[in-house]
Image (cartoon, rainbow over all chains, first blue to last red; front, top):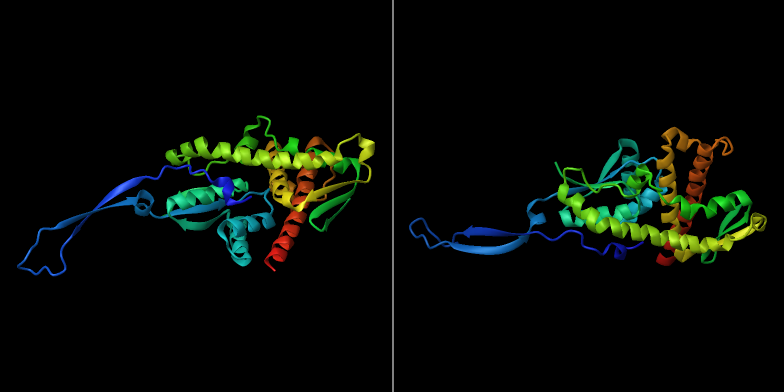
Length: 124
Length: 170
């Protein structure tokens, strides 16, 4: 099972326009130049950071299997993967990753491919 | 039954008819058969229900892809299990060889089967940890044995995969 199984982009990238107002650096108190307006496009997920990938406890999945999945999906070393696995086991859930939404969606997709109970949640 | 790794495949030998039959039931056991709890476990939601956009797009784009992924793994396992085709007597001392390149498919199919069976019977944590329960008592006990047997196979494959990974790194 590799990432290629999950190649489908299942979410259209939302684009928002950010308008920035900037004042020239050499502007003194008595000289006011006309402000410049810069336009740039930024993906929506850059604006609404961050999201969390949460894995929930499941009494059926083997602990060794869950550890292996964490290593594969997130590239975590075994010790870190085991820590998260034990957190899931003991506390019912563990936040495996946080960041931009689109990346989080791909992680959740991969985790579901391995049949883990994973959700994407807004942080905070 | 004996299970061991030989070169680039896993060999399950000295299979008695009972365990051979349990192995043959792996592909069928992955089918939720319209039991909603089992279907929901295989295709669990990607976010809370109030994340309407995420859930809707998931259903549209990801769920069919996951279904195909699970189906492909099950088909690979079913093809390997053709080695056990035949009448019950022929199962005595039969050997099943699983190529290492099919190990991932086996892990997936075994996991699907375990999750579906556990969801259908709604096993408790306590039941799932009771590895010494007799499989003969009832259909429920037999299914619990099936879940544990498939778990044992998963554990062995995982151990071997770990070994293969380390060898390929070295």
